[in-house]
Structures are given as C-alpha cells and as structure tokens.
Amino acid sequence: MKHVSTLAAGLLIGAAVLQFSGVASGQSDGWITLLDSSKMGDWDEVGKANWAMKDGALVADKLDGKDLSYLVTRNSYKDFQIRAEFWTDEEANSGIFIRCDESRKIDSKICYEVNIFDKRPDPTYGTGAIVDVAKVDPMPKAAGKWNTYEITAHGPHLVVVLNGQKTAEVQDSKHASGPFALQYGSGVVKFRKVQIKPL
Image (cartoon, rainbow, N blue to C red; front, top):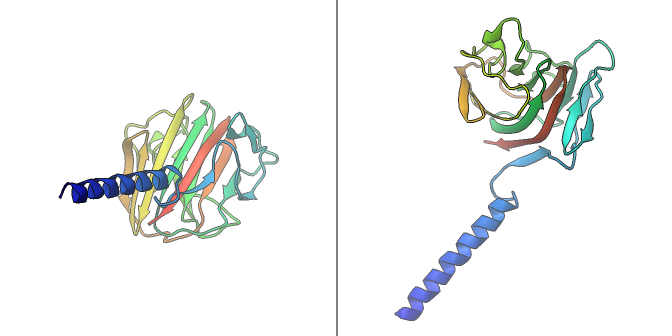
C-alpha cells in the first residue's frame, strides 16, 4: 500500500513539474509573443516613424512625414486577449487598434482604438478608453512609467484593463475581426512586450 501511495505522489509531482515547465516556457498556455525585449517581430508598417529596438524596448519618437505610424500584425484575430507593456512621455499620442477592417489604412473609424493619450483634449476618450465607443472616468495617467494593458475581445464584449484596473467595458459589434496595430503619433512611445492569446 505504501508503494502505491509513493508512486501516486511521484506521478503528481512529475505532472506538476511538467505543467510548470510548459507554462514557464510559454508553450502550453496559449500566449503568442509578437514583440519582446530582444526582438521587434514581424509587423507591416503603415505610415512611417523611426521605430527601433533600444535598451530592451521598441521605441519611436519621430514621424517621417505627416501621417501617423502604425505597426500592423500580419494575422487577423477575432476573439482574443492582448497583453502589452508600454511606456510613454507626457506628450505621447499612441494606442492599440484592434479588429481593424483593413490592414493598410488604420484609424478609429475602422478599428477599435484603445487609447494611450494623457493630454487628449477630451479626456473621456483618453488613456484607458476605447475611442468613441467606451468612455473612461476618471482617466488614468500613463506617462513616465511602465504600464500593462490587458485587452479582451470576445464576441461583442470588449474589456480594457490598465495596470490591473478595469478602465472600459462595453458591448459593441461594429468590428468582428481583423489585425491589430500599435500606434505612434507624437512624443516618446515604447513597447517592450506584446502578446496575444486567441480565445
């Protein structure tokens, strides 16, 4: 009897180790890393900015031309979670655009725009909001520190969480699926990790 319980305990420990190692390596939990501190990953650029890897982050601080710049995923996504770590200065205008109807023209009319814009003239759609879809009140400030966005899109249900605090939640079905994009508009914008998990 003692032999059987020892064997069972050994199997349980082995299963726990296997499960932990799978999660630690990022293979079994479903998250796909699109950008991290060592690589920019593969994106299509719409508009032009000086995106470059510096000190473990993807950084832009200047537009090359008048149009805003977007890094657009090559795949489309329908239901998903996004985790993105970002840093901006006070002058930054940035955001994460999800479920875009097109991949070569990005804006808040054909995508959901999860905003990063502390100085937006109308703060109800500033940082933490989904522009023209879900207001934020009060608007949190993101400038000058590393932040984490967790964005969930499941059918018409959209949820935005900034640094562990829910800032927007809405039911909206305008955009069902499509690529997502990282925006550079002004100031200094840095992304050091971007992951997506299809649901």
